[in-house]
Amino acid sequence: MPTRRREQIAEDWRHLSADQLAERTLGGDRGVAKPLVTSDGQAFDLQPVQKSRIKRNRWQRKKWQRRAARRKKGSKNRRKAQQNAHRYQRYEKHVRYDYAHQTSHQLVVNDTIDLYVFEDLKIANMTKRPKAKRDAQGRFLPNGRKAKAGLNRVILASTWGTVVSFTRYKALRQGKLVLTVPPPYSSQERAVCGHINLDSRLSQAEFVCQDCGHTDNADHNASVVMKQRGIKKLLEGSSRSANGRGFFGS
Image (cartoon, rainbow, N blue to C red; front, side, top):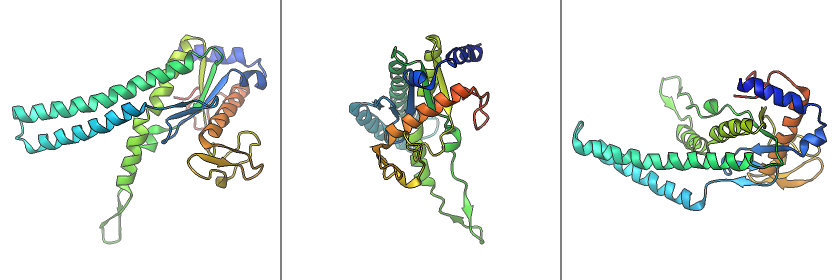
């Protein structure tokens, strides 16, 4: 039923022009430094005090995990230490969950927006552990496991998938729509001229088009690219996305 409802909404909007849709569409770029930046210039992230408390709770959780490991298995003291560790872990989970709800709510209650467009990210694949590597003698080689584990933690903590999932069902309640589009080269494509150059992304925050010379915040430029790709996808009415996951994504 939800898919049929989304298809009906999409069909109702296809009679609009690209310019008309542009006035009612919001693109979103998800990143590590900033969890979400939208095409209207908004940036969504945890509050500084929440980040500080999460950092302190992580330290406390590790402390109680170490204590639990040193205590006798099956003992009452070991169980108490494990419960304390879980308590500090739940705090971060609840904060992230609340952030996802508040962010999705703020997006959907905007009366000027009817279409939301995000990258179709395969988060499960992006956070897989790197495969072990061996040399000719069978000894394990460095594979960047620690660095990848740190990146995975940041990606999962950014609640990329949760924000989009919450926005999707909340938008549908109000007759709005969420689309996902292929992400390749969105960080290197200039939103205005469409020029793609790997050298245009000078840093995490700086984007300078190597063709027209226009400068912009890199995340904001990518969010506008998402918006344009979403409008094109809607008007073309393609039944499947580029990776075969369906018109509306997962």
